[in-house]
Length: 552
Image (tube, rainbow, N blue to C red):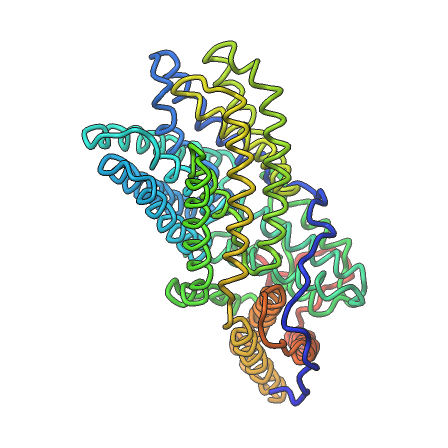
């Protein structure tokens, strides 16, 4: 354990950020995949309903189609299972909502059911790491369905429509495997190599967050590669590249940033994976470590988020009802969309949501005359906005909301045209109410255990460092044990940084041991570099030749 003294006490309340909340960033590397997939999943069912004159059923078919937004960052073998659970989760929430809507007309009861569903969806999506888009789409579908006129006799048919389009969404998302079967793993590995190269360019003098971003990319790559048990020739080659990225982060002054970028560039398309030569011991012992924890272990820390979500959603819905708004589920969904890892991030999301929805209402006002030209125009506009949302949302959440808002307003018109002025007014009121009440719930329900999680992460990092140091002190350490110690230390340091960042944005809590965190990171990364040198894993700046031992 580190003997460093804790940092001086800081004020218990943190300032909420404003700078940079609306800053536009770079788009996601794979923004086009969910964008094209959701259009491909929505268009055929909607066009069929249009031809049949039953566009009023589009709300149920879109429930399944929207599942096409999920799991695009996962390898196809893992994606297949994840999408099945997403579709089942969507159907489960929809079934509860439809049955509740058919059994009672009490808006208070329906809002309560919607809030409980939103909390369950939030916790399960965060615990299983399903996302983006996480729980928000599931909550939107189930909450809207709560206020759709319904009878018990209609429920099976509506669920069947959603299930059929869910199967179609699964097929749409799995189709690229026929062309590029290792695409997700290649992209994750390339992202890790680029992040390591960016940090290597600084010679190790860059900000700690740049290094943390590099380790986060490396861990994401490992999670992608280890999400399936099959180890093909391609996967083994990708594993060696991730090791190179990991070692470059540990010893940036000895890394060749240009070579890392060249490897990343070579992973585009379907060409052969470049071979990163490693010593025989490293090749033999490249087994990977489990970078994830069990589901139940992840559920515990999410309890405050569950309480925040349930409380914020139910109060937002009640406040909307008290104001006489006809669609209280909009306020409920707004509140549900806010909750992030800590209060500071929740505040940022609240600002982004309000700004995006206000601009989105203006966009809807401009587009509604076109959409009212006919039901075909309505469908086309909805498809355009669904594509635009995925194009923009990775740049900043508020930009995506500019497209999501008019799309949600247009969906309400599938069953019949509404009064635009009334729709826009209710949307604005519910947005403001949901954001204010939802954020108030986040402030009221504090995460008192954030500091405890930092202490546990510190302990884990110190133990991992001590284990690696003991092995380094041995004259002939076991190669497998040394590799496991290095990888375990890398995971512990990445977890420490993520835990400390999450806790730093929490509201009203005891002071965090920031100095101990910094010292643990510094000593841990020094040990990582020493371990890499002992293993002979430092990059070779010489000719780009492939060693015999590196061949799969």
